[in-house]
Image (cartoon, rainbow, N blue to C red; front, top):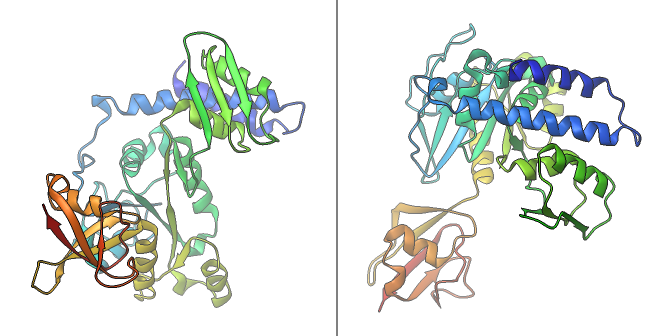
Length: 364
C-alpha cells in the first residue's frame, strides 16, 4: 500500500470522529500517524527523480516572496504590471508552467517574487506539479496568497489546507515547547503553564507513535497536539502570509469593504490597476526590511545605494554586510537617524539600527 493510500483513510477517520474528552487520545494518535506519513511524502518529493524543469531557482535580491494561488487568479498579470517580466497571462487557466523569478524594486530594496504555477486541490499529493510548487514556496520569506474575490473563502481554505499538509504554517509562531530526545531515562514531562489541550498521557502516546521512548519535554505555553507533533517532526516552516483578493471590480462595494477589513488582507484589481501600491506597502511591512545608508568622512551620505537588512539589525550586521573583516577592525561608528538620542551619536557594535539611519564607520 502506497503512502497516499495510507493517508486517505486516516483523514476520513479524523473527519468523522467527534472531538471530545473521550476521543482526544485517539485523535492525537491519528494526527501523529498522518503527520508521519506526510513527512514521508515530503522526503519522497525531494528525491532527484521528483525534480522538474523550471523549479531550481537561484535566490537573488534582498528578500524572496512566493506568489501562490489557484490558476487564473491574476498572479502573472500582477507581475507584468509591477515588473518588466513578461509572465504569460490569459483568461484561461494554467498559463504559467514554470517558476518565473522577477525582481520588484521598492524603497531601494529588490524583492525576488516567485511566480509559481497555479496550485490545484490535491497539490500536496503531487497533482499538477503541486509538490514542486510548494517545495519552492517553503524557501520564501513571505507568501502572497492571490485569491479570486468572486469565489469567496473557498479558495483560501483549500490553499491553507494544502500548505498546512506539507508543513508550511502561515502567520503562526513556532510553539514554545522544549523537546530533546535522550538515550535513556524514559520520558520526562513538565509544563510551566496549565495545559488544556495536551496531557502527559497524550504526549507519551504521540512520542511512542514516533518510536521515541526517551526524551525531555517542557511545555512553556498551552499548545495543541498538532503543535507538539510539529515540534517532534522539526521540519515545519513558519512564515507570514498576505492574503490578496483580486478582481474586486466584479463584486459589490459591500463585499469589497468586508474583505478589506479582514486581518492580513489587501483588495486589488489588476484589470483596473486599483490599489496595487497598497499591496507593495503591506509587503514591505511584512518583510520587515530596513534601509541603512553609509557615509564617508567629510562627504555627504550616499542615498543612491542603501544596505538592506532585516529589522532589528545592529551595527555589527552592517559591518558584516559591507565586508566580513570590517567588524574585527571596528573602532566606533557615528550614526544619524531615529535610533539615536542625538545626531551624530558615537555607538558600538551592539547599537540597533533603524530604517533610513545613516552610518559612518571608523576603523582602528
